[in-house]
Image (cartoon, rainbow, N blue to C red; front, side, top):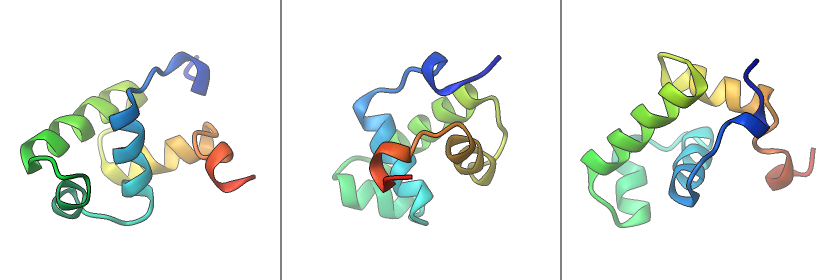
Length: 75
């Protein structure tokens, strides 16, 4: 069963995931984090694979459902 404890994310993947959840596009994330656009795309692809989803919207929804943002938003 997939849960927050079974999904290991790098600090950069956490940043990308958080920015996606705030509505940033991949291009905006690249500018904000001072990394290349292809690097952001690779992070998003890796995140979708880890969360077993096919879309960015599904990725963010599943991350919220699994409680990935609780420590950041105080829920």
